[in-house]
Length: 417
Image 1 (spheres, rainbow, N blue to C red):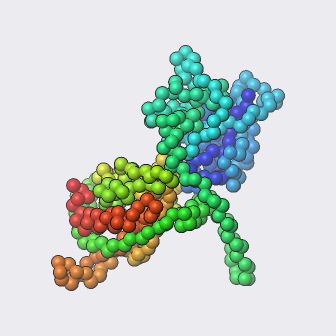
Image 2: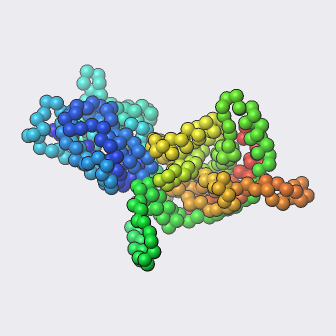
């Protein structure tokens, strides 16, 4: 029976993708784990990995094809002992996936199941299913396989009761259809029509949904930076031999993470009739790249040293600009930070990235007249504005988070304690 390879959803927001490059050709023999193609999603270019072994009988989507919908059959594989000329195509089976960690995707619908009986003590399961089960401590022998010949695939593991409920809560309910924007009249002004990239389409859709569906509340504080800048200079002097150079943003990431741990009512996501309150602070950091904006994540930033944050952030930013981030490096996060101070922006209101409950917008630090110890002085001050999902976070809790963030920045020894 032939196996039909379908365009997978490589991220929770992906609806279509570009088949950037085939890494195999018709007639090639492939094994589990072999790379089949490179697929450009709304966030990055990722490798597409085979789960089953066999022979590539047909490539159904041309290399470079744009706008390939998720679920479209892109190729077929038959086993070596089958004659591809006489085999009737089977019902579609997703037989390939990406190699990175599990995405936040909804459980697959229930299909006709076959128990994956151990053969000689071995349970038939795809490599990705085994990885996910190992990470989540799930016993594969208790799972019913729905893949070819009863093989356990990723969807079977994701759909287990132990994780199906929490995974499903992270997938936003599909919004009501948003009216398409009216066509822009041609007034005879010279122009060039630029086709939107998959990333830009996703940014447009998600930010529109965020502003329409999430009631934003904005809270702004002035934060004095002098002590932070002094500490940064001292730390950079001490770290010079290690090749580490801290940025102001590295310290602000740490400050936001620690503030979220001190004010857990803001480290939340709104999930319909429930609320998810996180026990660690994973900070998504806005990074501008040529095709749009992406937010690599510093996991558990509150418990990492500022030097570790700096090193990790530099590596993630470089991968983002090369389009090489893996899904687990930009999917998730409990809150975001966006810093446009380096471009001279004094203050702005950022748009929340659902399902996160808040985002912090950082403005430029500038010397201003400021009251220091009841006397007028010159200080380096920046504006920080928190955007909060008012369904999940009350104004008083948002105000407390901004207060704690301000205190951590103005007395920064707490960031390295």
